Length: 242
Image (tube, rainbow, N blue to C red; front, side, top):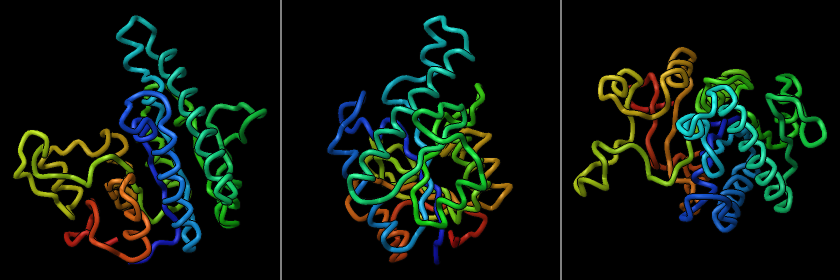
């Protein structure tokens, strides 16, 4: 198992840590250190970040805001998160570029695929913000799309949990961590790994989805660099091989 380039999908909730809202800078620094470790091992890292720690478009819709408008507001939240991560990574010594699907040139580059690839080749971390730039699409879908566009070896979904379980471990302490399964098994079990559009993009383009706990020190490096049996791999291979 070898990785040259990965797409890391970070939810906004992970950036909020235990607080559930806003920024938990201890959690952000932990995540930053994990990313730096991986980059310095020779793996190219692109990222898509959500905005759930600030606001969610679907929550605003429930309050009466028109869906498209609510989604655009959610996209702006992802830009704030991207700029926060950029600052954290650069203070740790890793060059970083933020590219947005909606142009805001005073603070970030517009998304240009060839420029993103060039940054990755120069070992810069590229953070993709503002989702796909269109309403009605989640940041999960943006992550799957960007993973396909930059030719990522896997989509690493960083969460607060250790992977995918046979049942909800909060409800059943006997739930078992599933280390590997195929796309079809995930569909058959109705596992909500990502939304339907994102999952379909990964399956159609044979992009393995890896779910692991980003807040456990060394998890990301140990999986990507050492090949440790951590988290859950969803792929076309029954053995979970990428």
